Length: 45
Image (tube, rainbow, N blue to C red; front, side, top):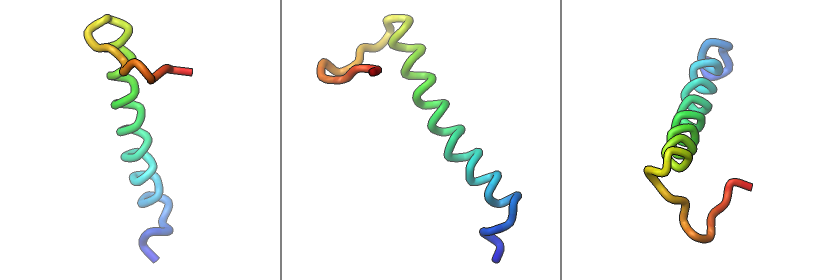
């Protein structure tokens, strides 16, 4: 099964984690630099 190969799993994990880190990191930087605001009901904790 091709989906069980280590290379395939590594690529899939890299895509998912990279997207998550990229989006959350960009939002965190923009909020910290005061270029964006979190919605009123949202918090980091």
